[in-house]
Length: 318
Image (tube, rainbow, N blue to C red; front, side, top):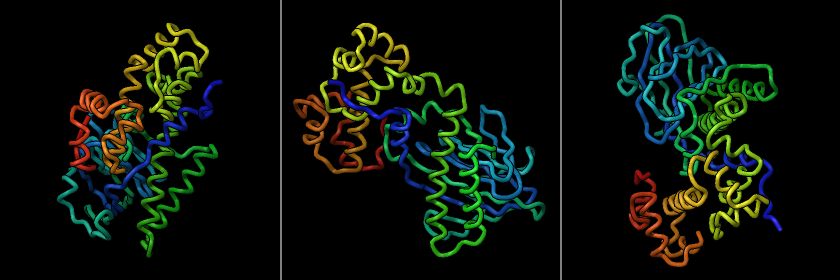
């Protein structure tokens, strides 16, 4: 009897995009203006234009002109520039005056007094390390423009609500803006997944494959099971050799290497956030001994599980 899995492996993968807001900012800008935003490791920058226009520049990508209602994501946390025109000076944002509403939300006012542009910007960090499997394959910029689809209308309605809250920050407005912004980040990624041909290759293409996508979902849902190439192939009613070849072709690594790496990503998240002991975690992931688990963890992650547990969420690994 085959194991039930989610009908949409890609939707299940999006479940891992839970986020923690690092910093949010409402920017009130007047021409001429420009600013350079710093690189932030393991973060995704987003920019929502609520009035006016601007140019987004990321090294190695074509500049994008953003208009009211546009949403832009810089998925890899790269440093980048925003300005009203391409040749405007763009000083570091850290040196510009901010009015802090809280330790994570600020209002920035900057520029020369000309035409106005308002933005809601922010940086979010993905809590679950498995999200990197998805984020790593995203392009340097995702640009979501207004369009006529029902989903686009929902997105635009959300943008309008953010603009209204940003224009008159009322009690609780900061929480509304941050929650809606996080939703829009996921919507922006979903839009790219649905419309960009490059989202049909590599790991994302494997998730869309009827058979290999099912295998990936089984591994994601049940990392503790004693998976082998033969047992995964049997779940899919494929021969062992055909499954092994197709998995490697689509995913880019052998099936058992992927299983081990996924287990270690799950372990990394649990050690950082749940407080489980190394022995408990070894059992939860199907290892017969703490020593075997620790060896596998250090081989894949580069540090011991004990080092991650002692350091907490702040340890940079992988």
